[in-house]
Image (cartoon, rainbow, N blue to C red; front, side, top):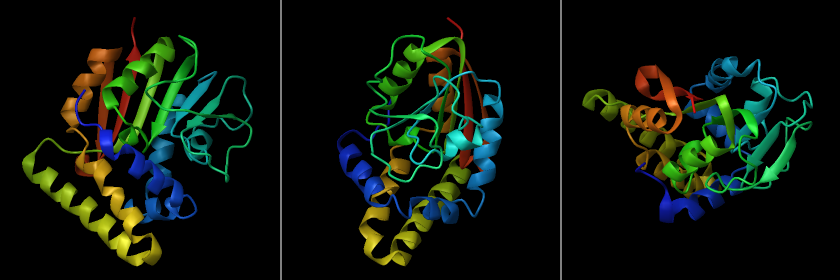
Length: 225
């Protein structure tokens, strides 16, 4: 699967770590205040999960939206960064990369990535590794920025994200260069249809909901075999 951060990965992750105290505020601004509702919409499909792996969990906001902060056995929040402020304190925290998940095969019934999968070093390797740790019939839900297939929509959405990230960088003063780095994640992303085809190829079944003119996507994949 094409379009990974590759050589930009370390600098982007370092920027996210440096922004940890203000990162969610930036998310709220960039999403026009809708990020909480988007998380809840994506998490609706996880309500029946017995155990959950939250990729790029950060402080645990996606796990919280999924109702997995109740200490249920086997629920894990994974992140490469050591987040100190966790809203979901009852789940186990593990440090690791998406491309080398430190779990046995078929370990999880559900996996979720909320605005985090785009930060992978190698996107193709990451989703293959997610498939490995999922049980047969397991569900992988990805909430992330989208890149529309239609040229006009893509131009509008790209202009918005680039403009909004630059404005946010200016407004945050000392964080200017750090927020500016985050633009790299969107530029490296593949188009929505390519994402959907890749998920279908790896997992066997996948569907996609396109929100905000395709600028935000919810991809739901089911491991068939």
